[in-house]
Image 1: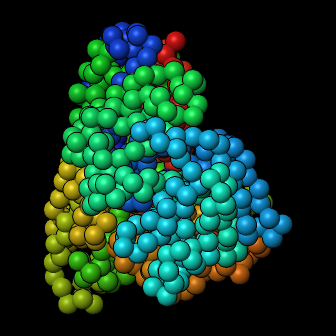
Image 2 (image 1 turned 180 degrees about the vertical axis):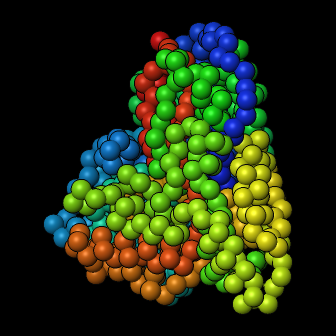
Length: 544
């Protein structure tokens, strides 16, 4: 799942680790709930935006959906999958037909779940009226494009139920990572009865949804910063679920989070800032987790027309000292971004994609050159000054990042930067509607393939909120998914060249690839961590 900060799976606003001088480690006693061995108290850097599988785009929503629902297959780490609601599956020789054999399972209201529920959920996600931002992941299913262009009925989509427990997909072309796609919320089964019952309010609170995973969501009103994952007695493998409750707490202030961890109110805390990481340097509870979350600046040229000028965009990028950002502000192991595509996401013949596609000038610091290009761009635009706002979430860490960016960018003569800090759900909603000039955004790929981030900037992709567009770029990304899909060498070259185009044109301004240092109580066991996608899988977690 892709934005993946503020743990954004996909597109979203970035929560970063702020450089605050905070207290030392202090007490680490277990919380009263955790000692019952049935409850966890977990930190979240952001609130849920929706529980509607067709509309989820941020990582917090994805993570909650992943643990309260189950797809046909589930992630198993290292780009592998394992059986979920489907106990087995097969692929035709031509790679274009996937058949899933479903186990007998139930919804959280006790009703039977069938293959038709998957057909309904996927059709709903493909329906243009649903306006799913992630619908493009369904794009290789036969009939999808025609349905999007309103040239075919929804019933023509190539996903069919053959009886109650067999689901068949027909694809336009072979897709080696299709098995990974079916783990995503956009492919989840949905209860037609629940969707019709709740109408437009479906998924807007924990009471207006039914699910089929190891947990159900409770206590989420649609706007609050606390919610609970409660054990689902109707889950097909409920006997393996050891926890009764996982209480989520949104932590916006690093000091508050640290205090809650030290006093046992949290069993896990994602550390924020160089000082917090340093405080736990010698603690066995400290774990530094690599992620595939890439954080960047998205420039909406329609709302900030001065930045239609390439020199002004490049000047912004050159004015940011990323080494200072990563080492002095974050101090958490995050990496300076080389481009839009993450390091360690993919490699070929021993060469990492980020190295093969690296355009140094697009992600380097050179203030002298930045000022020169800035002045040239201003003259070309007939401007003496430019004012721009940078949108981000309103938590303390995001505020620290925005202040850093403001101080860096205002070294450009005549540039006035205003920080626009908003509640996460508000900022995320405005970002999806392209209601910003510049936003601090992020992407956490759902699949470990460069096409995951790159396809979000294709001009027709609904996630392309900045509306950056380049015809050659579109052709290369589409070619990698079409005529070159089964030619690894050509496909690699397509994507490398596409990355070079967006970086040479400064379509985005890459900042850093996030690392996630966290402290977790030593008696918490069995949690699966993924560097991309849903991040946490609690299905087999327990407290020892």
